[in-house]
Image (cartoon, rainbow, N blue to C red; front, side, top):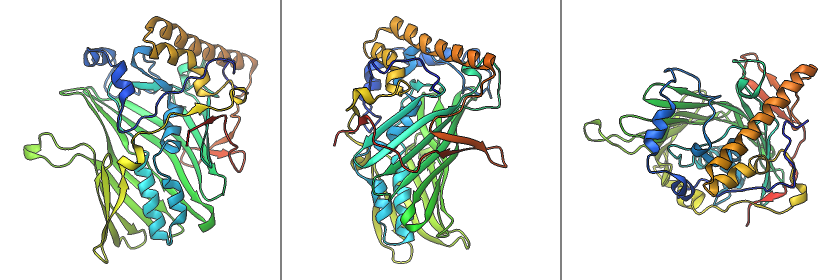
Length: 396
């Protein structure tokens, strides 16, 4: 069951992924952006959860949050995931997973946010031999006739390569909160990188997104990130932070540093330091050798925009179809049409939710099973072992 009424014959609009050069947002940015952003929060109390805040279309990137999650996986200048599976030992594989996790950190854009996905929305893309499928499996009260404040919007991701070397399973939900002069979005949930041939599973955290409104507007990644592999007994600790500056003024907000260590003893094996938008180095503490762990210029610069290869194969729930009319209007800067088209998508989602509740139906995801663990955290399990090839592809 799909909670949208878009037709697959509608225009699918795909826009450039976020990379080191965020040209698309620069084209859309109005002259008075800061003042307009501040006006959004005049009546919002500090500490408020913003997960169901509906932004006007003028503040939207022309893509869904599902697409942003997916682009972090399938849009890359080099195949870092395959490198994870080629590591000659557990330490090299863990370091490769760390490098890949840094590559999912894309330059954020102040004043713009993606669309909130509607329930049942999907995003299915292939890049080379790697196939990626996302689904919006749970929604909070924003489109529901029943107020359920404790249910966050949950997105699920499943990705596999044709050779069976790598599998990704994510179940995550953002929790953005307003703190008066800043907004901090914490991405909760479980992100797993599986290397079946080595029987290794890596649990990977995500940094927080910090948006400062005052005294000077900025947006940056921050916080602690862990990459843990229980079977090898190794883990990495990373910190996304500002570099130290003279008298505490300024500083580079794109620093990342950390270490790789043995989980049981805490013995450090390697040190990690650099900038996630430039290069990050890895120092072997035993030998003193320093190598380049991650190069952003190779990984996330000049990324290719996905294209529709099979129009007939597009699902009506595909993000690029669901939001196609809205995105097209935003790209044309036809703001009234964008407002109306966005309202239509949201009203349709509300109506379908209302009709479902009146019939007493329980909505079930199409591609994942959904459950909660003993701590109340959501878990998503793919219903098939491998993701099929997609109608949308990233040009080689």
